[in-house]
Image (tube, rainbow, N blue to C red; front, side, top):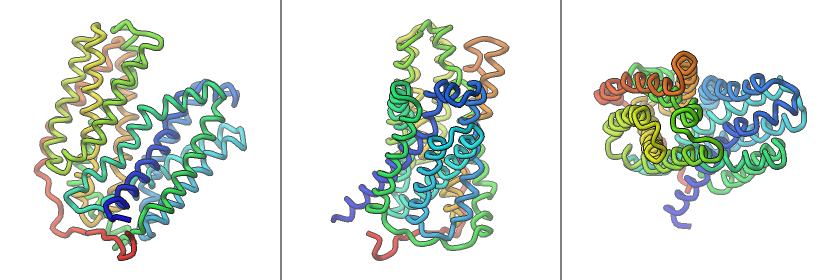
Length: 397
């Protein structure tokens, strides 16, 4: 088989794996009422399943990445998918809320591990000048899961029950496992121990870009978490029409994530500045034209493009600035993003409680404006002089 074709198939397999994990992360939102009724808990208590997953990914992902840093990358990917399938099987076998929460923490942690190792594996399969595009292919799996996978999974869950949605996730995990075994090449162990990796992964230059990750997604989710009340109260949209606006954002986000790799390869720093400023501009525009439904749909599509388009550059800059600590650092953007999502949701919640449906847009705008000079400042950061190169084993492809 042609080397380029093998590489593309391997990247497609990693994309599919991230897609499946992304569906599992968000599917609970669409069937939350069904889970609450089945487990005989409140909707608020069922909502802890979302929090548990986010915390598992934010905290457990880097920990598992550190613990497996010396292992063969394909073996880690395979083990991760097995654990992920088992974590999603547990709530189907044992209908207990506490055990369900614990399983979600595990699923979140192994998703963080899969994404981190997937990035390292993907970048090892392509020349350095195509690293951004490899990242964008893999990370776009999450955007596509949000745009397409979650709505379809929700439809299944609302039709045949939440057990059906989780069964589908397990079956897709098995498909991803088979694809990984068949198509993803073997990548050698990372050189250097955890301490050596950490020295570079947590260097101030890396932390600065992680801070940008945090700020950008705090800004986005301050507004996005409460976009439905905004569409209801300001735009005057309700019912099934709301899905049109969410689909505009989701599809544009997926397109941005997939295409953003080229911008990362060309000039990641400039991409971050433009996309951060674009995010702020979209939040301001939504506030100003919120009563005009067609314009709101267009602005949400532009917003999705900016947010999705910057994600490959955020990941690329973190990995590049970490140098020899890239293997560990690859797990950190996901943590920073999840913390940003949590903080942004809290900020938006405080805003909407005190000032109405448009207020979360303003809180998001304020955070985005703060993020613009941070994005500009990170452009002056340079990778360490020593750089670790991950190469494929001779028989890998």
